[in-house]
Amino acid sequence: TEILLKIAFLSKRCFNPGNFWHITDLHLDPTYDQSRSPEVVCASSGKQPAANAGQFGDYVCDSPWHLINSSVYAMKDILPDPDFIVWTGDDTPHVPNEDLGEQKVLQIISNLTHIIKQVFPSTKVYSALGNHDYHPKSQLPAGPNNIYEQIAKMWQDWLEPESQELFKKGGYYTEKLLGRPGFRMLVLNTNLYYDQNKLITNMDDPAGQFSWADQVLTEATNNKEKVYIIGHIPPGFFEKKRGKPWFMAKFNERYLDLIQKHHSVIHGQFFGHHHTDSFRMFYNSKGSPIGTMFLSPGVTPWKTTLPGVVDGDVVTFYLNLTYANAASGSWEKEYRLTESFRVPDASPDSMHLALERIANAQWYLQKYYKFNSVSYDLTECNYNCRVDHVCAAREVDFGMYEECLVKEGTAAIYGGFLSLLAVAASLVLANQ
Ligand SMILES: *[C@@H]1O[C@H](CO)[C@@H](O)[C@H](O)[C@H]1NC(C)=O
Ligand SMILES: *[C@@H]1O[C@H](CO)[C@@H](O)[C@H](O)[C@H]1NC(C)=O
Ligand SMILES: *[C@@H]1O[C@H](CO)[C@@H](O)[C@H](O)[C@H]1NC(C)=O
Ligand SMILES: [Zn+2]
Ligand SMILES: [Zn+2]
Image (cartoon, rainbow, N blue to C red; front, side, top):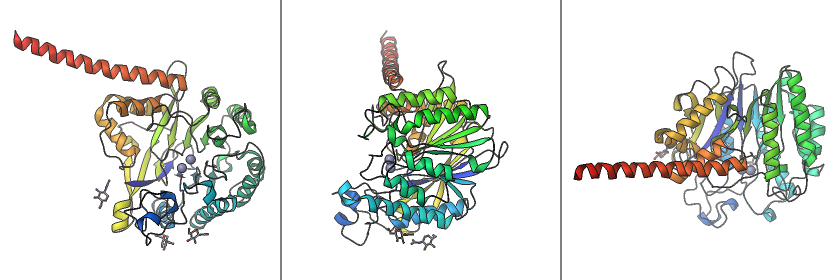
């Protein structure tokens, strides 16, 4: 039933930027008005009636201002002084382009920028563009344009001068994390790899972002930095829809190459876009886990000590929308990764172990599945559901994903077949 906020906690041992919030997919719908009749409560519901509209929202609508306000203040309440905030985009509602326009999009981004600044005035924010942060939606250009220019101005307090210049050109940038030596934040504009983006179809390296990132990561290796990557649209497949990728195939491959080449300095990847709570594993050619990408659900609180760190952990908070509308909006802890999946931390090795548990034990699978939708979907994760979720988390590569579907599918059928044989055998025995 819910909306999530995520906070991430870095290790206390290696380095003390300590803790950060990850917020994503706020999707403000300024038209939301619960006092109207259900068909017209919000523009983002399309023709669907908002039957349970309350001040915190309705499942067929994007976020009312009240929900966004509540989530930002909840962050302030739970962790008032994070070392930084990661914000991975998608600010505007799911409505046709004709209902928005460039000014409207910029206004909404400015509105959300404003509340984050107001509530966290002295906190550094690393912010990535989402596919809904442009007009027309998803058509983010691989070069300078008015929207990148205006957003760079809006975010100038959060951007070093050099980052501002880069952002205006391609919507990406990098900085030493909190200006400290040894740590780096890489903010990507992966909307340039989105298969819905018609502007980049014939390009090899939109806005030169891959070659730039390769160079940044090469230098990071030389300087022995620890790098965190954030972005909006993730590579790989959507776990709730079989065979649904986001990146164009050629860009998915390049992204994987980039991670495989530089995994030793990449200590975490944080993305959004799915509106579900999941993760993606990266493996080397020998099959050893080398990295994890964490996908945060919309308006999501998440606490984690970053992967790759000895005492890393993840704690997720949620708002029960039904209860909030009926009584009051209190954000509660949903789960702690290490507790729920019985792993020591959030490192790639531990996440691999968690994935194996999810893949092989119905109890873990069901728990993961509940968290995936933040309790919105409490149905059983059945045979096909298991294959879809396990393969999406395990294989970011298009070909390997297809192989996984076959392998996991066949394995399960074969398992079922064996148990049928066992029943047949016991019947035979009984008959003898
Ligand atoms: C943001 O928009 C909401 C309505 O959608 C409005 O109530 C609020 O005052 C705005 N805040 C700013 C800072 O513009
Ligand atoms: C935003 O949330 C704070 C804290 O809960 C509350 O005091 C304030 O009235 C809220 N503002 C709006 C516009 O809902
Ligand atoms: C959310 O709140 C409603 C109403 O109080 C309750 O019936 C429901 O069980 C709650 N859901 C969760 C996941 O806690
Ligand atoms: Zn979104
Ligand atoms: Zn998106």
